[in-house]
Image (cartoon, rainbow, N blue to C red; front, top):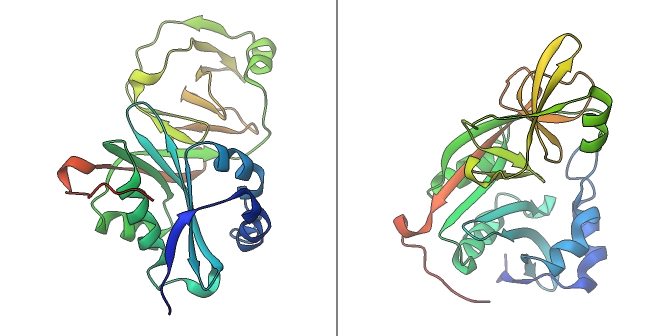
Length: 229
């Protein structure tokens, strides 16, 4: 394999990036839906060999941490260190001291990579796939009421994990199919108690569906060298 360089994704890369990722999963991929936003916001990186895009990763930037997402490697270039190269470069150029990311519980290669780079597991959440509903409609339909609740754990919003201290919106509670639910105003909806049947939601309840592990790395403890592109 010749030299692989890591540089920023450009708007003109849309077709090549979406073509590379269109069959990432059985259902396809979401990269096409977020491509324009990722180019404009955060840091969107690509690994390039001989003018061919062979991998990508996006860094979402928050005030007190950065979030790694969308790590993809071209099917013909896997197990060649591209994922490690992209992740390492993202770690180096990230301004945030704390880095977090999310990995499906069955994605053993990605978990092994993250662990080898110093990431540690801090939480596990579960996603129940189903019908997406606007939060306001859920509140209206189920007649949910605002309640006072002290969060005990972190939560997901916009497929990003946040520490409990970040949550500033109201907490809602009500009855769904005879059982109490307690919900956060997030997308997808995050439940800290109960379940929502056929609706899409995220929770800490392992019966909810697919499991995802949240990993974290403190750059100051791993001597990560800060660089610029």
